[in-house]
Image (cartoon, rainbow, N blue to C red):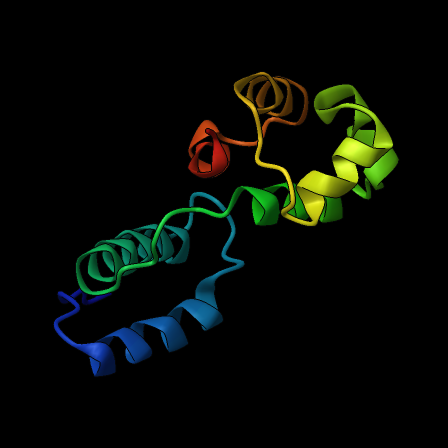
Length: 119
């Protein structure tokens, strides 16, 4: 395993191709170690060279819904009545701090992903 810094987008593409081959490596193997190192290098390169902007709280909520197989009705304990859930998911109402805390505590959505929309 020869690891080199990622200096440009061509290097990044090579590393990503390598990651595709070893991404499912079994824990404790040399390929798993290589994968972990390469992921760290990719993150460092991307954080330095790309501005991804702030997280989108609605997309974070929708992502968690998809992961957990949740419906808008399942969000009512965290956001409020169905009308309020609809307003949040359709970006007509921002999240309140109370909603953020409930979503974080109940659905384990990171605060960083939810706080971009708090007013």
